Amino acid sequence: MPNIGDGNWIEAPQRGVLHYESSKPMWQRLSRCYPPQLEVIPLFLLALAFYLTLHNYSNLPDKIPTHFDLHGNPDEWSSRNMIFLLPGLNAFLYVLLSVFNIWLAIAKDPRTLISLPERRKAALSEAQIEKLRVFLNRCLFLMKALLQGMITYLLYNTIEVAFERADGLGVPFFLILTALLGLAGAMVWNSFRISRIPRQT
Image (cartoon, rainbow, N blue to C red; front, side, top):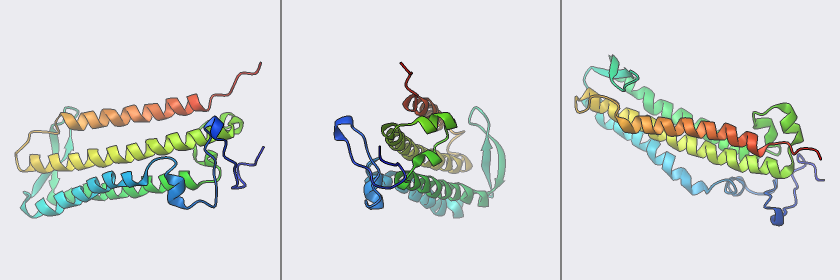
């Protein structure tokens, strides 16, 4: 059995196993998890957040909503300069999750990046490891896109409430939040399902 850390894996297409190859370019290894071209989606949302901020900042009132209650209604107001926190947070999360995406795609042994009980990680087969690599990377990309969408929408609604064109966050914010929570739950459940230790017979 080949060593998972040696960087030279032989592909077994009949079993649908994706193997790590250290000689492959980074984007080629990432493309095994999801098409890198899809990065245009969160990048567009990130650019939109900065555009909305810079386009509207000079016309914003001195105070803008900076906190919303559980019903989506504004319950705290602060200086309009606080508006820059949202695109800044968007940029930080994009970079952070992109680093994890790339790191997970190129890691020789992704078990070091996966949060599972040690007994489960030690018992993982190469097929399970690669399945986890692909699944978690796809989930991280979806999480990145959803977070960019949610924060950009929060920014848009903050501006709309500040201009008195809206009363609160609205339904779309809570739909995106629900999708994020569902995705997080699916990541945990499927990680344990994929890493299931076969019963001894």
